Image 1 (cartoon, rainbow, N blue to C red):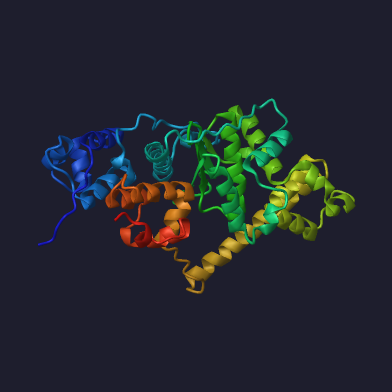
Image 2 (image 1 turned 90 degrees about the horizontal axis):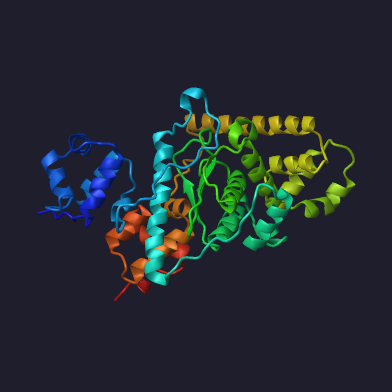
Length: 405
């Protein structure tokens, strides 16, 4: 006979998840394909669901499976501020995918807090601060110094993905959880942040290009320095008027951290450039040197008075057209079956979305027998068979070599 693994979840977590989803017992039972009496038995602690049944409940409640393994129902899952300017009929609205990613980030933070305190005691505190009255150029340079990213370090990053991982690692070493949302359209949100201490959170959109994610990451890190997290679009023309000053400031700081003012103005290519019309080759060279997008380079030139608004807008329009053309070409190739499948393995998705900091914390907790194998699978949202590859990628050791005796 087949055996069913029971999920060792607390009844109060089941009740909290259902009630916070605004579902009655009858509605939840129908979505999870069980009888109301059985769901009530789980919520009253008379029996427990199987792992498969718990996954169905998570799908019905739009909650990540890991949330059911928290030590107690979270009290911090509150709506975060929205700095975007949306059409009137959408104001204050979030797609189910975005709402899920916000809850997932909040859930992961709760788990990380529990695990870190269990393993090491008090988590590190992100102490960097800023105010809107400061010079964003100075704040950007200070952020870079706090993160410990040397002037020459970007030149050692061989690709835009390495640049993304480099900045991400620098933030995580300061006690910032950096996640990636995997199922939200860029048009809806570029990133968001949760400014709570300890272990504040930055989330960037996995569907964005890597260098754009780097800029978003630093933009959201600025929000953490201001102690004002929220949902962000980053396009200054699409920002809520009430929050434009803050979003413009965060964009300026992110640009200054990526390409500090004095460093840029010292570059030979910049000193030798005459006039406001910048050759594409020079823009590309500077973008490669700083591992920043070409748009960020041109924007920095505008901010520093080395080009005009007209040139910036012209080049920005050209870059957007180039991006759309590449996107359309890729879509056409996919439709014709000519593009590579681009399948990403579950282990890579787990590390990419949850981040090395969170993944190491979960793995270390498992190896020190603080959590079970079911917890391990749930927290990382993968099957156990994928754990060895995750181990090799993040801890550079095999599960077999480090598993408890």
